[in-house]
Image (cartoon, rainbow, N blue to C red; front, side, top):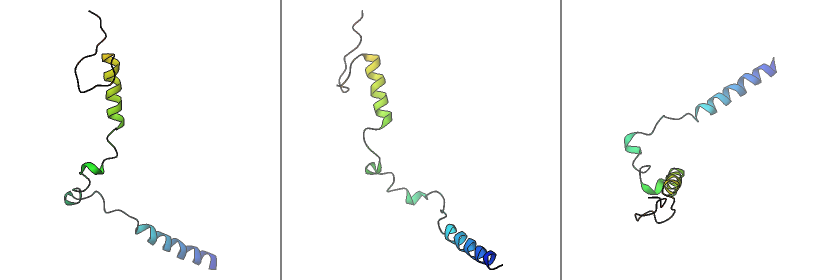
Length: 76
């Protein structure tokens, strides 16, 4: 009997503590300002950019110098 009462009290305390961890949901529009800044990104060399560079280099048979035209397979 005492063990079940202790179990109920401990369960209630754990439930109250976990309820405090609940989120308010998504951030509101006025809270997103700092998240939209460029310095909040994870990095400049993202996986998507590396994949695009790999595909470009594979199609053009040239790597590096992505700011200038040129490259190609050399076939006529």
